[in-house]
Image (cartoon, rainbow, N blue to C red; front, top):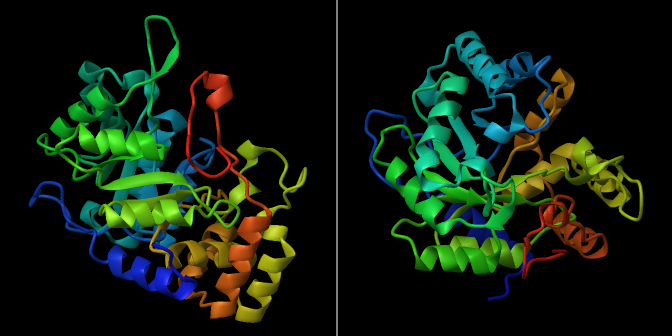
Length: 329
């Protein structure tokens, strides 16, 4: 089905309000729905991770995205505790996501991975636990291989532990998602993937909505992430310096960052920008108040067609094929 911009936005917003169906009832925990605006912790340096996370919660963020592979969950956990205390909130008032790393794909290691994450974060449970990649790293030989079905079955069992409200995946391809669904009793609650104006993947998002799966966008500010090298180096301009994005920001009383984030949320996807700087954390939160005219969405669609680019693709270094069938795989 082909959607116009307006039809896509309307459908995204409608579906975003109907996808909140618990995978199992956990009445002892929060009934909070996944917020569209979150705070990411990838590349958050340990030196001020606790302070940054605490400030994000005090600013108003109610969705914190974590992962074992980020190597900072103890510091993030302290920031969560400090932020909740400073904001006068309880654990049930925020949404916390974390992820199972590749070295814990073996079914008998999945619960161990969850326990370590919960312990490091200082929490009793997670709102969402994702399989970080469809890739298993074998401890016995250090080699990577595609492997996720048995891991998913072990994750399904976590739902009966009382320590996870929802489970999901990250960085899967269409073929992998179809295969997983065909072999599973439980549909992933969410799929986290790289999404931004340079990698819009509209049809892929629509597929998820059709299957009742929420989508979370990581790197929503595209090549502003230092992992991807110096922003603007090469043929793809820095998203936050893109003249089209800058003009939209000026015309609508926003900033380039809040334009990108508001655009992402308007599609019904959660966005999880990361910053260690208080002023940028606050600026990004302002995306909730950035309202753009219809023409802005048409212009952003053209930006995506012109500068299509996927920044996070470890296929070559890992020796596995990822993102097959997707844009700029």
